Every structure is written in C-alpha cells, then in structure tokens.
Amino acid sequence: MCVSTLRDLVEEHTSLEPDDIEHLHRLAGDWQIVSDLSFADLLMWVPIEARGEYVCVAQVRPTTAPTAYQDDQVGRVAGGPEVAHLAIVRQQGRIWREGDPVWYGDMPARHEAIPVRRRGEAKVIAVLGRDTNLSTARTPAQLELNYLTTADDLAQMIADGSWPPPRHPGETTSAPRIGDGLVRLDATGKVTYASPNAQSAYRRLGLAAHLVGESLAQITGRLVDDPLEGADATDRIHLALHGEAPARKELEARGATVLMRALPLMPAGVPIGALVLVRDITEVRRRDRQLMTKDATIREIHHRVKNNLQTVAALLRLQARRVGVPAARHALEESVRRVASIALVHETLSMSSESSDEAVEFDGIVDRVAAAAVEVGATVRVVVRREGDFGVLPAEIATPLVMVLNELLQNAVEHAFEPVAPEEPEVVVSVHRFRKQLHVTVADNGCGLPEGFDLDASERLGLQIVRTLATGELRGTIELRRRAGGGTEAVMVVPLAKR
Image 1 (cartoon, rainbow, N blue to C red):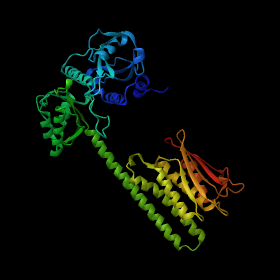
Image 2: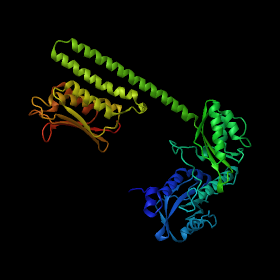
Image 3: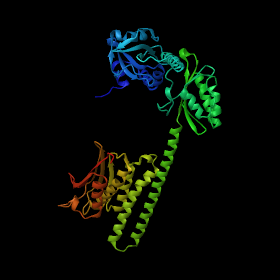
Image 4: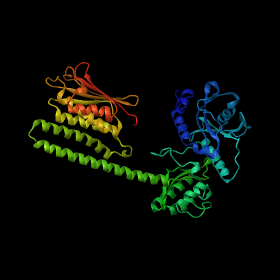
C-alpha cells in the first residue's frame, strides 16, 4: 500500500499554488513545538472545494500528553457537521475556540481550529485542527500555564502568517524540543519562565542562580567560554526579541555544550518577547569527538597498511627485474598487481570520510584496476569500460571483490584476444543491484573459452583465486561461459546482506 504524502494529498484535492504547498510543508516541519505546548494533536485540513468536504493531509501528536486519536487521520475525508468549525475558520479567518467537548467512545476531546496563512497574504490556505484529549485533565500549574500561553501566541502567529520561521541553509529539522528545556522572555529580554530542564542546562554551563527575572542575553554572554561566541549568542537572543528567527547556536562553557534556538513571539505582528529552547548535548558532542578520534585512527591504520602493501609490491617488482627465468618473472609481476589491487582499497579507506562505517566508493577502484590491467597486460589495444555503478560497498566485500575483478580483467586483456583479435577489442564490466545482491559481469568479444573448459578443474592460479574468493570470502557464485555473439563472460552474484 502506497502512503500518500502531504504534497500528494494537497495536489490531488486542491488547486493550491506551489508557494502555498511549500508553506504547509514548512509548517508541518516545525509544528511539533505547537503540539507539545498545546498538549494537543494538530491536524492539517485542506478543503475539497467541489464537495464541501475537508481532507486531513498531515497530523502530529503531542509528546507532552495523550493523543486524541489512536488511529492515523491522514487521508481521512470529513464533511457535514463534523467540519462546520473548519468552514467557519476558513470563512471568517479567525481562531475558533467555542463549542462543547465531543466524544470518541468514552474519551472526551476539545476541538479548536486555527487558520493558516502565508506571510502578507489574506487568503486562508488551510485550517489546523487543535484537538485535545480531555480524559486526563492536567493541573493548571506554572509549567502548564506557560506552555498554553505560549501555544496561543504561536497559534496567532500561524493565523497571521508569521509562523513557522524561515529555515536557514544547511539546517536540519533536528532542534531542541519543548521537553528539552524552555525559556520564555518578555519584551525586554527578562526571563519570565524557565522549565526545570532549561534551568538544569544553564547550571551545566555554570549558572548557580535562578534564571527567572534575569536578562538571558547578558547571562548567556557571560557564561560562554569564548567571548566572541558569547557575543554572537547574545546577538541572536536580541534578534529574536526584535522579530527575527536566527539560526541555532551551540553554547560551550565549563566542558558543557548546550544547543540553543531563539524564536520570536509576535502575535498580531507585535513583538512581546521570545521563546528560547535549549538542549544539553554535552554527551552527544563528547561521543562525536570520540568517533572523530576513532575515525582518524582507522584512517591512519588504512594509510599505513596501504604504504606497507606498496612497499611489498615495490620489493616484488624489484625482485622480478632481477629474475632471469621468464615464468618466475611473470609470476612475480602478477603478485605485484594482486598486492597493488588490495592497496587500492586501503588507500580509498584512508581518504574516506566514512571510515567509521568501513565503506568505500567502489567505482573509482574498479576504473583504476581496469586501467592498470590494460596498461600492463594487453598485447593489443583493448578498450575496457564500465556499465552501471557499484556504489558504496563495505570493506569486507570490497577487498576480495577487487581481487576477483583484477584477476578477471587481467585474464581477459592477456588471453581473450589471442591468437586473433577482433577489429575493436573490448572488455565490459557491467553491474547492477537486485534484491540485496550485486550482479557483476565481465565480458569480452575475444576468441572465447576453449572446448571442454571447466572452471573448477582449471589449474591456473588466477582462476583458482577467483573461484576461492567468489565462493568463499564473498559467499557468492561465479560462472565462466561462452558469450552470445562471441567471446567470454564471467557472471558473478554476490550477496550484500551483512554476514
């Protein structure tokens, strides 16, 4: 079953402009804050004009309270009395809060509705249903009152078109949430409320006093270790107080790291303060630093292994030059190529930024091995090309696979075109992924296999290496056969699932 996205549903049922749809996407990306502050589910409804009905195109549940809906509402079409309050909001362009609780079985719920506009536009492009589960009524303590007051301010900003704030380039949706820590500021920048988690986060930064009544910008600027960073954090809080939404900021002090996001509060276009969300990410950054150190160590190990392998290859190459027996020299030269192909994998791993995953971009390695095979082994002018992409492969697959491909390519360019080569000698490495398997074919347009050829019975070292690695290390299958139209093809299937 295909799950419809917000865009799919809007485009199917409405004629909203692309800018309208983009605004709804941004709202759905940032509305968890409103849901958590409201202790309510938010449902995004758009009208189906021709039928007088509404379709729910997105839903978010609160993390601070029980949901009002056990079942997913996205895609549900509603009409008649059930959507009368949505129609009022759309017609009158105001927030709707009147109405008695409704019942879903034995669960009472309160319905509210908020018009959605774009900044500077009068048209209501959607309606947000704010539906609260009343079965577990919350005591109106300080936290709840501050949450609900802030939620109402944000609801008015949604109706005004000034929420959500613009997203900054390169900024992901990951941000502090309401439960991580919330600070509310008045228009002068003084703290009127700080949740317990927010107070704890600032204590990690070195603040011994309570936040309430203090200037958050001044306190933050004093606490941060780097004066320039402290001034930057101060400026961001001031920007939020003046109606802007600056990018998130990491604060570092006394070995602790706190992520801060400052958001303006300006219902009806009037700046009344700011909402500052904070999250203590000290342990997250500590683990990041450990991973970076581990990654650097792994890359250095691969670099040294590559250097050692290149040294071994150089020694073998030097020995080959001193050997007078052609067969022995040829065997040493083949060993040089095999060692060099393994060194290529370690060289790629040493330069990879994803060493912690021990994965490599394999296409470049194949292309370099192919070029080396042509340069060293071809007695005629052979063209080697690749069709398809290997993509990123784990090192445990990449190392044996590059050795197999090295042997197959070397075998093809050295032997496939003897004694008579076609007009355009060619070797093609083709690859595709299918059902968590890698299907690889190395095909040439040469003379083909000799009569009665049997891979399992072959005594050639290169082919023995191919068979052993393909069926053993790679846990796959390999077959050498005559190619339709002339030539030879090696067909290999390698499972990609973890061992």
